[in-house]
Amino acid sequence: MKYAIQGAAAALAVISAGQAMAQSTVTVYGLLDEGIVHTTNADAAGHSITKMPSLTGSFPSRIGFRGTEDLGGGLQAVFTLEAGLLLDTGGLSQGNRLFGRQASLGLKGDFGTLTIGRQVNMTFMATLKSDVLGPNLFSISSIDPYIPNARSDNAIGYYGSFNNVVAGATYSTGRDNSSAGGPGATNCGGEVAGNAKACRQVTGLLGYETPSYGLNVAYDIMYGNTGAANGLTSSNNSDKRVMLNGYVKAGEAKIGGGVMDRSTHAATGLTESDLYYLGVSYPLTPVVTLDTQLAHRDQKNSANDVTMLVGRLTYYFSKRTAVYAALGRMKNGGTAAVSLDAGGTVGAGKTQNGLLTGLRHTF
View 1 (cartoon, helix red, strand yellow):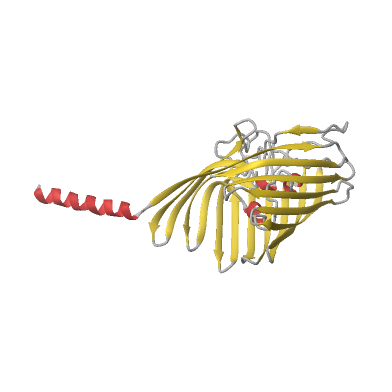
View 2 (cartoon, rainbow, N blue to C red):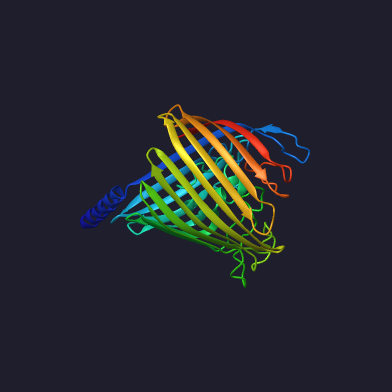
């Protein structure tokens, strides 16, 4: 009995030591951002509107939990749970999901990071460094709302960086399980027996990045199924985006731009477009930054082109707190009705001007 007790004590000591070595951390973080926006020509009659936006101000609001556990040998277990918040109502974004921005678990090592779950895909990653406005209320996100909402349900993801070369990919067996409103909810859950292509999505990225310059190419194709949004009502329907993005530092200024070729094979037929954007970010003082961006969508075989021009000033009270103001103009050609403010409204064929001001805090 004496030796049995001693053996058990030794085993417990070994287990305890192993647990002490496998250190884990959990970080709670978030961003709160809200403002007031005024836009002209918000309807066919030409009325203006003043409102508090739901989707975003300068960045979408969120709260998140990020964790790591050291497994030894350079290997870590990682997870992310991130909820999108609507500060105007206190609700949840991304189709009213609890963790609509991200809900993933994975392994990280010298090989890169491998994740499973709901996660951002490579279209989201591709524009992070080249889009100087990011998911601002006035930005290329207004022209293509998918860009800041490029996430995939039921996805396997990979991302790695090797001597300035970056590579990533995602594969989703059912890209979007939400049927609620909003640009991130397209009702295509997939995972249907007998139809392996239903709601599948594949994205990929390859690039070269340094502190001074960078360039990447990205590919994104999603398939539809019965009941899916945006005309993708069959697994034979698809929406494909191919992107080329880049950035370069010129003194204190950062210049970023890109082009996205999009082709949509929907139930109503084939539509094609090219989206071009070019922007400059420049620190006027240590606490004031000016961001400007020009964007144009060329709608093929149509007069429904759109052109956008935006300028934004940001004043930093601290590293965590800032105020901002933005002026923008969206010109709609033909019968196009792309609003300047993401998620807003505009009369068909009308030019819309807007003013946005807001406050942002990170924690």
